[in-house]
Length: 495
Ligand code: GLU
Image 1 (tube, rainbow, N blue to C red):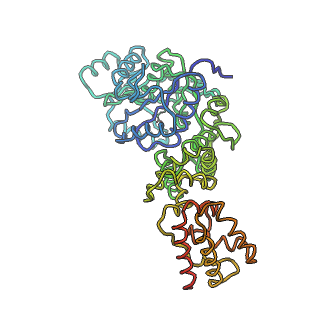
Image 2 (image 1 turned 135 degrees about the horizontal axis):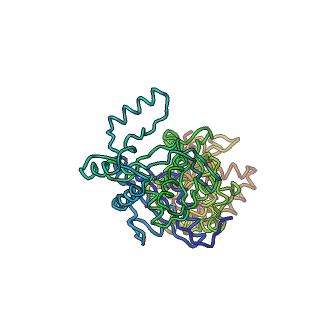
Image 3 (image 1 turned 90 degrees about the horizontal axis):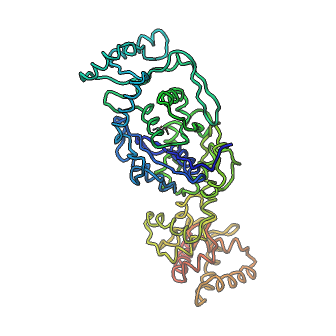
């Protein structure tokens, strides 16, 4: 069992190479939970050493995404901390020093092979049906000669000198020991020709210097995991607890989630990118709950706030089994968490959607409306479909929908006229004043409440489904309600 009394230092270490996706967000969530659970620290480290793939704005998107989710980090590029800088391109010298330490200890060597030579080698290996690996030419160079060539400014990379014999055993907290014969581990590049490190060196150095206790990362790193433990061991450092999280599968459960799946999701009103979630009407509470359960072995429908997750979290119950992305569950958790919001909170969150839809929003009015639609909201943007009619000047009912079941247009018009008569005679339209006379009318007319209220509902709200009718009428007010009813009568009379 894991000891939760020692403060953990954990980091999320995304590369700013594209949109922040669910994988990064889920890692950040588990990091955050472990940090909070142990009174430790959650760190954001930006791994931006692949200059060709760096996308402008991606770093900001990560920071915004984490904040939107409520996963505030204790240390990071924009908040500082005692172990900075937290952007790898600002740590260039640190990696060079560490590469030199490895060279001096005999664990790394400069390699002067040109891209052309490597390309030729790759083709020959392909022809022999071998997997690509460095052939060790520069590994065999005399170290003094290599040092001289480096001093002369000859372009080179630095490679890690993987032992040729023996076995490397790497321990993953969820998967146990993973062993691999060293002859199958390549001499990976740790410093590129541009002088910047690859992940294999940079992440190991930073995790050590930043005193990271638990490395939570994607399962795609399992293949180079033995290399990483060898790098850490070559320095003589203690290893962190390694946790490779589960892989995300396509919604169908068949195969890994791909770029195309991301495009498909968008067409259905979902996304695997955090930046889209807000606009699609998802709330952080729902997204967090949904993500938490993809890879954490708690019952699938457990509804938890972030604090409750901290309370219950354990790295021992993370699971290595792949998790299929299930957007129906996202809807479920989102709707569930929307129902847990206070009236004021819900009002503040739906407001931007009304504004975006072009309505001028009165806060007091919205505060009355949002509790009425809460039960029906799956995503916040549903508020427009359910409650846009409150803010519209006029509604455009579908004529056929104004006709009550079992009746014709003429009969429906007569009912609408009667309703108009009853409502217009009342001094004030509120829930208490409107419902009793309307119900009395239903009683004596021999019609059903569904017929009468159905006409009234479509006339006044413009839709067949709405929040409670008499409450809605009260909110819309007498003048507007009667205008809408009048318009419905005219439509019915013309049919
Ligand atoms: N920069 C790596 C990535 O984005 C980080 C992996 C890790 O967390 O160590 O995949």
